[in-house]
Length: 462
Ligand code: UTP
Image (cartoon, rainbow, N blue to C red; front, side):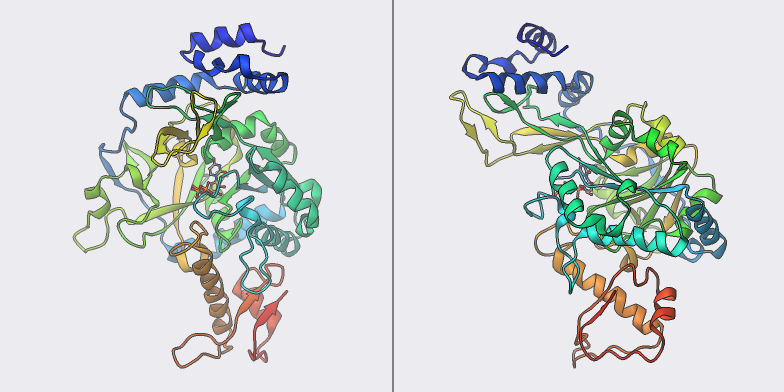
């Protein structure tokens, strides 16, 4: 039964949030209905945890003892035995792909879902197109079916689905592309009060990529995965077009080690780079977010001069479906950030603050790692697999990502003995773009292109 005013009032009073109804008398019927729906959807159990965190002064940081975690080095990460096991799993149809794309992309400042952002150097193909074509490339190569699950949020779900429909799912079979919406959480003021951003509206934002666990369960996706016979899930983020989706050796290492979680790791660019590091904490594998490391921990060096906490996780994982399904019942930690959140003034008008005024809470996917029976960390070469679009300009921006995509493809040409025309400063004279359906890896690229190929202008291979 839908919530009515009296019941809503009682629930809110019980939870110390009666102010949510303070503009009730000014709302029309539709606004009242919408507000009641929002109240009905509130997760009061998590709200209590959020308030507790604020009274603890926010973060519980990792002052605890941490040690670097073990890492499978690059030299062992591509073993043929592992690649073979991964290929067998893909062919057998037990591998699915999960993309988290519910974020707000506020740093990039692009109108619309970040996955719709055009990034390919020549065709301007979007991030979604590049990811989808990689899956299509794998399906073609291994004659396999690879279901593609995409997590959206209420703010971008429709636009994301429309984009896939308008583009005919980029050649993927429609029945293997599944969207599911993550949960939303309110923001709290310093006293733990829910913030309204209009008289009849609670300000809500996505509950973090760790919200995937609750969303997979709530939307029936675990059941869908089981029905399709999946066992192993490749997980990645929308902003990295270099990602090697379901790379067979990574899948194979995960399966051969009977791991619950596998984590791709690379060397940090510098001690202050904003990525979490892989550690052993209280005897368990874990990732500690960069904001939760002390300055000493970030800069600590080993006797040979290497950074002690050198290996960062960039949210490229493989999960066992069984583990993830069990983990959906676990309570994972919350992370808090002090942010600017629009709020409704006493006059009912929305105010956009110029300083952080609110606390937003998120769950992070890597917080499931300590619960895993077996975790493996696998090194990868950053220049081959990681160049995210985070900012509008500067580092990790569209310009650096496009340049990194082209550098990777130029390396493919050089690997097969085709020279790159360069200017006097050594910069390639032309642009290059290779569609994932043309080739996913340099070996296939070499076979397809042959030795006689010469670069005499921009090269677009598809
Ligand atoms: P980021 O942490 O980079 O956040 O997300 P963002 O929202 O995309 O960008 P900013 O911080 O506002 O600039 C990393 C990945 O996690 C997904 C994002 O879509 C991206 O693929 N994500 C993040 C979610 O799916 N849901 C969330 O609630 C947060």
